[in-house]
Length: 170
Image (cartoon, rainbow, N blue to C red):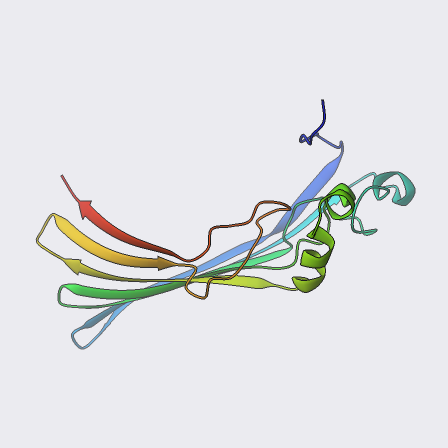
């Protein structure tokens, strides 16, 4: 059957670091919440053989496929009385190693990877109003700048999306 499937490749080691910083505070009548996070991974094959293991990859380096070495996130939210305003960002480094079949057999993938060969980020924004003790309504914009991003080859992420959300605590 034609297609792609995930396969274990043998001896691997994934090491790295994940750091997060959370903050909460008040500046007069304004409340503030902050989240900053960074992840670094070094995902390698411990028995890497250049000829065998990079023959069908887009990288000749010892990097496991479909991994981001660097990723980060940030979120800030400011509140005043019943109104909150927030913005978040998610960023990933370039996914260096994927199956070369995607680049060879799928039209546009080679060009897309050349045009998007560095880190990329998505920004989201939101405004909310606390209706009462149990209900909150929010207007959310995901992918504010309408970036074309692929989480992995051939998986184009959604364009800008507008959401109206009602949250009720029971």
